[in-house]
Length: 615
Ligand code: K7E
Ligand code: CUA
Image (tube, rainbow, N blue to C red; front, side, top):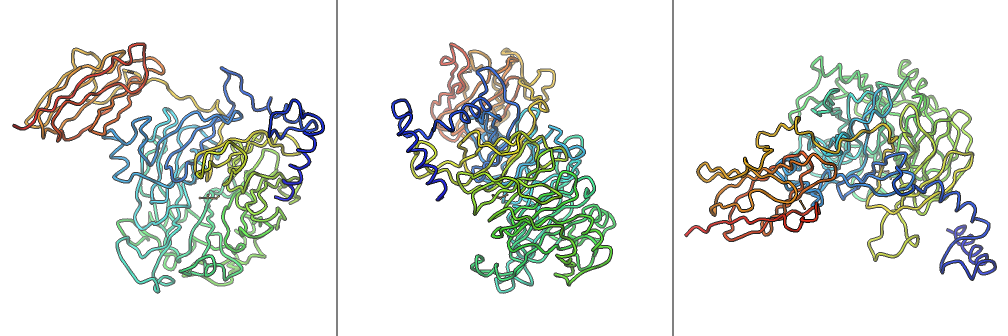
């Protein structure tokens, strides 16, 4: 802060001296920095009609959504609704997406995870967790949420996910909150240390379709599991998660859960867990097979780590596991081979409910003096690591192997996660790094008390990191994934030949109402510039199912169906069919109209639902 002030004062003086007549009021430009600003502008300028080099998929936190940006322009391209209704795309209004949301209308999204093949992003799916025990899959063919799996049994506060393994075998999950299991059982809080349980779990992913299903669960002491990362290359087959509150405390955790000097990183041999489950070694709890490490040893180990760690990150070669106490001034580099040796030699200092504890000194390679408040680490292509420092509000760049800190750049302000181009894969792309900051105050036009978050684009192509751009993003940017744009090939139209919905129709001649008792099915065609039929008559009390097909096969020709007073808002992409079912319980005449501006006669695209009263 002090340094920022000094710079500001210096800059103000420079403006006054040299460019008072030309600099816009409040400009922070200085003649000395001008060339840098010009370079930064050039590096981030994507000319009209040109395309960005990377996609950024950013967590939308408790908005429940994923935001898509182009990098380096940092332009917001689209919002992918996942856990909350989104009227812009009609998400959560039609039968299918409403069923997927399952009655919940919010989710707290934390960690998006792109699917991987051999540890590299393959551009097929994006998985993302939310706190209410769920993981969702977005298909990157059409950028649509296709599955929401969960809420999973026994898991409360699904923070430690949706990290995928190097060949997308699993999306890994860990509970932040411990509860008595199965869910639904209640026990007094003074039983917390002994009878409440944490859970580590794996969601199985079908390699062809991406469909998720229940994998396995492992019971743990009531630690608060925080974040994870899958091993890769030599550490493939292992999964790592940090935890705080190894004190098993309750109440004011900022005090009670900070008693010990160290918490843990769990090292989980997930192939061994898979095998144990296949051999029938799990206990059925809450409808799922759960491994109790007391009965099934050899699956989980605990690595002591600085107090209350947050992120844990595995280097691209899989050799190093990096994690640290979030109030420390150093980050610890653990050596995977040393971890394996210690496990083989049974070099343990004790156990936690049957889970062996390794010796810190035996498994660590280095403590890197990155600065205060290390949270998360990402990687470049050249052996450099980048660690976010919350307390210092900065990013530290350091070298793997020599453990030398070579550069630091301030972040405005209070960085949490950071995201480098493919920076958590086996082959990071370098070039860009984005600081996902918690505070933005004073760096944008004020928008009142609800301030946006700030995401700052940093150039990492040279020795020194350079700030390129400030972008302002929706809450809450916990984590993001940046992938080369050339890896994605989204479709822009659903081809008519692939239409599978039995209620789809492709000719206005087939549109109309059919009735079976009080069940009414309405087949609707949406095409420029008519909604056919233009009037629908039903009786009060009917169950009405409207199936609408947008028969356009042209990019960008979306149509909407807004039905006033019935809270129905559907958007149908070209070639898509959407179905909405509702009870026509209100008599009267209700206009429906196209909500997406589609043609010169868009305004004419309207009709009437007539609900005849009972008497
Ligand atoms: Cu915000 Cu990964 Cu949920 Cu760190 S988490 S900052
Ligand atoms: Cu269709 Cu506007």
